[in-house]
Image 1 (cartoon, rainbow, N blue to C red):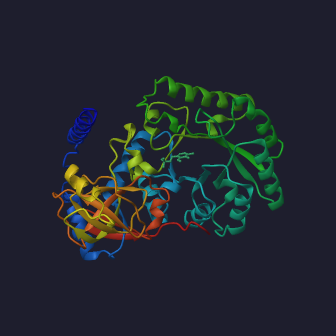
Image 2: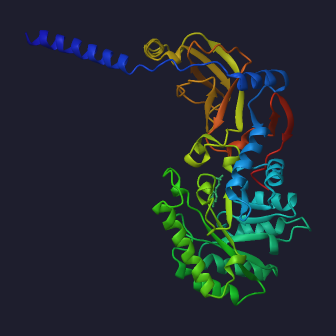
Image 3: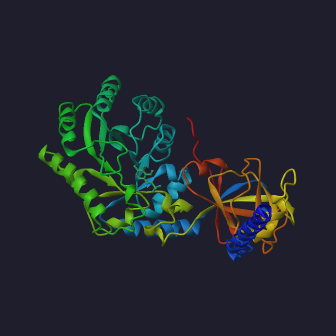
Length: 421
Ligand SMILES: Cc1ncc(COP(=O)(O)O)c(C=O)c1O
């Protein structure tokens, strides 16, 4: 009796599990390349190098730059974030279209590259750098037309770091512009409250031969995801803190309207369309729109860069090493796992965007990665798959020159920055 009820109980459980599996069965989400990606596939099969590449859609870049600059408006400076667009010709293109010379830089080798390539740039550091990185910058500074004393704003977050930079300025016999990182709620460092500014401004005022005060930088990406407009309490809180620092500087005799008052990033820049507390807004990623930037204020921007990689192998069934039972179960359960492709490379910070409906990979490999699809996807060996990077920083540096296209033509190749130098 006991055994029978156990048996029935077991069967019941199995039936329930089967029922649940059916209930939660994923839909077939597969679809072939649309017109946009079909045309890129043909282009790359014809003119591509046969390895993973980073494609840049120049028309979409232009559109995205226009959206960002119209949000910034004519009365503020649009500052281009170099780490998110790490290529001299790409930066040049964006700066020309946006009519700006303002850059935000986060890496010493990039700062030297910027000084070499853009003798007219104003380069604000986006994070406080070890003083040794500043020393390296001056040692490698080659471009006679780039005047570091007037064109770099070093970011300082503490009295200790200000002391280190002052000592370096004295040692090198140079003058440095100092911009203070302020904490407007992100809590990633910077001066914690307006009162912290006083002694630092005094130190600068007492050494005009080596130091000058150029502005404030208060980054607030914690506003992302709130769908916030200007009157949102969290936004008003950020701006209130920002104004507190400005008032403190004013009280110390500083002409604040001449400062670089930087803030924002691609996610939040649009919040400030009708506010003029900050006069200098930064954005980089919104120009190419990686997947992490599918956010509230960027709905008008379009994805403008893609990893394209050739298909090396195709199976019309799911094959798993060692042929475990799950290799039969998975394609029955999930129609998006009925075909198996291997692509050239993988494990990038990126998601397959075309063909559509690709589930998370079984595993990732930097050499050749498995991609499963539904039977609605009918790509062949040597066709290309396309991925959208989750971020542009770093990922853009992994493929050599960017392949720039407009509609169905490759129009240029743009080298990317070197990580060292
Ligand atoms: C200080 C600072 N400002 C602005 C940005 C915005 O860059 P993006 O527009 O690429 O998100 C960042 C990104 O990390 C940042 O650290």
